[in-house]
Amino acid sequence: MKIGIAGAGIGGLAAAALLARDGHSVAVFDQFDAPQPVGSGLVIQPVGLSVLDRIGVGDKARRLGARISSMFGHEAENHRVVLSVSYGNAPDRKGLGIHRATLFSLLLDAAQDAGARLVPSHRVLGREGQALRFDDRLSDPFDLIVDACGAGSHLSPLISRPLPYGAVWATVPWPEDSPLPQDRLTQCYRRADRMFGVLPVGAMPDQPGQQLAAIFYSLPVSGFEDWSRADFAHWRQQAIRLWPDFAPFLGWVAGHDAFTFASYTHGSLAKPYGEGIVHIGDAAHRASPQLGQGANMALLDALALQHALAMAEGEEALRLYAGARRWHVATYQALSASFTPQYQSDSRVLPVIRDRVLAPMSRIWPVPGILTRLVCGDLVPPMPALTPVARGM
Image (cartoon, rainbow, N blue to C red):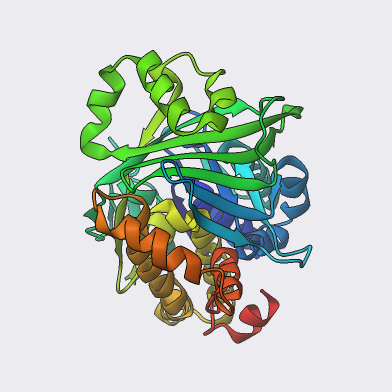
């Protein structure tokens, strides 16, 4: 098939690598003059790593990324343990903290090695039939358009609900004097209206000896402008008072400009395809990053699409793709919607329930095992309709 992919993000490049390797003629269009990543660190869960292995970049990702064995969070004021999730003892079922630029570089190389053609400086604004529409021109027609443009897609009919909380992110060198473990995502909460976090993300391809951390601070979307105009030294002092272990990481940060703001929305398409087009990743479903599944969902979408196109043709292949991903996406969307307000909201009641009821329950059998499956990404089968693929995940 002749396939046009809109968007050179994680989902788009993964799809390009997989589909080009199957012999399809693949062109990837991106708005930047040179394709580049957007964002800081992320966690690739075991289900996502299995997709990277199929693409052929799993081992490289593991060498550059940081192995994550657990997730831990505590409340700043009462010091209660709020979050404690282990990936378990299986050595092949760990998370991988990785900088988005590192993952992007690996997937870009894989897509180009497979024969996909990258077309920069082409911002996709819509479609006319099977042609993609740019600022002043149309592409040649494609047999299939893959919408991987993310949350800002002009191709997706998804109307999502804005979430009231976002986060600012920065990438810093891992401080030598930090007491935090380098195999753990660590977070500190002040009720549910403030959250600090440190994620080990390994190294960049051009500096393999420098270990990095992604640091983040959650705040209301409506409060971002006030935060960015406030005195940075005062905010730093408040942050360190709430979480002293955050201090070594802030030592690398000079001011607000070191941080990038991200806001989030929630929603999913009931039918993530149409005539001659299929939507993957954030163009098909969007949620809070609270469960750390965004990039993994995009990778799974790409793999499901590859196998659906190998098993069927035309609309039947797209129907198969949608059916394969439906229940996994719906489950994690529902769980994200229920968990997020406990950690990012103005509620005074939910944090109390979280700390005094849900957190103690999370340490009672069989809940720890369920939480492990949840973070690993396979609480439900990732693509049950594609039985042979699901068995190999």
